[in-house]
Amino acid sequence: MKPNITFLMSSAGTAYGGSETYILNVAKNLSDDFNVGLILGKGKFTNDFNSLADENIIKYLSVPFISRNSKFSALLRKTKLHEKINDFDIEAITIMASTRKINKFISDSDILEVQYPTESLIFPFLQKNIKKIVHFHGPWLPPLYAHSKNIVNKYADAFITCSKWSKKLLEQTHNIENIKVIYNGVDANFFKPGNSEDFTLQQDYNHDLPRIGTVGRLSSAKGTDLLFKVASELEGIAEFFAVGPCEEDLIQQIKRSNISNFHLLGPLPNNALPPFYNFIDCFVLPSLFEAFGITLIEAMSCGKPVIASDVGGIPEIVDDGCNGILVDPGNYMLLKEAIIRIIYEKNLRIDLGESARQKIVKNFTFKKTCRELRDFYSSLIN
Image 1 (cartoon, rainbow, N blue to C red):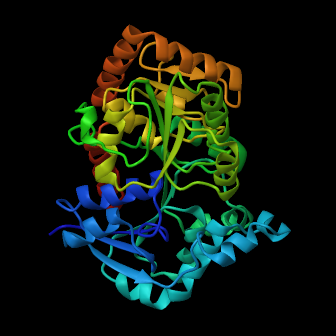
Image 2: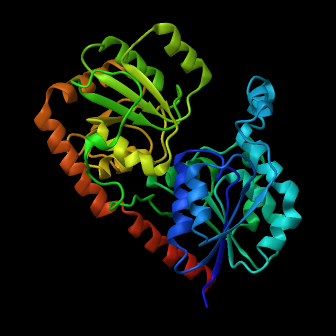
């Protein structure tokens, strides 16, 4: 008889992001060994979640919540109150309004794992016999959880995080112990080198120029403003493509600039990402902070050279000069120099891309991630 495991992630079905992609893939790939459940907030579901739901391999509970994309959350971000309770916290605590439904849904679960720390505030109100896990997708504690962690963590049976760097900070800065590091992984048979012509665009661009791309939440925290500045100085030399939800301030900045070589493509469903990675010549992740970088390993798995910030867990993935180029976070000139080097040195692009693919296949496959998760969950239950 298969054990029962439930994942709680308020934004799993309504937002595109690395953590959302991770948990949907985990839910799908563990379904052979576990009866998998997923608790998430109601709303307009993403194509990625709808694809998983249509397969009918997991059960899910969708409950009302206030999304980070709501007007209320947008208003909150403009107030000082945001320093004490942010929009991700709001998502988490509004999920708790459905504690009775959640308790009923997990009545036969052996494990409940939350994907956002504040969601663990629900632990004291759940049945005692279920094992409870907090999964940290980075070392940055949200305000509400930071104030209550000493109480809430007493109800947690285990902790998981995605990099050694994240574990070290959680231990040293927040005194959280016994943290298991399990790297995120990628399906190397899905994210693989392919034909660049499989990705088509409506936007006009110069087909003869090298293509630089990025994927993720497009914001100053992700360094997208720096990438845009580089693009503005390389008009006629390279075309830049950005996939993901974009901060409004950055959208307006791009519109005012009249730059023709920086293209905002909006969010793409998971099945459209491999064609995009194969469409570009180089992937850039200029984040100011990054616990891991799922899009980074997706691009590397497609055999693309990468330029990324030397920050957080990224150096655990990218070996500078071997399978990618690392630059100091926030350093515009070094970022520009690395991109120019990639543009003009074709052999370097090829060598870095081939090495990147080899690194992912050896160390960061989703098969490896799921194997480690299965062993960890089984040991916790037993």
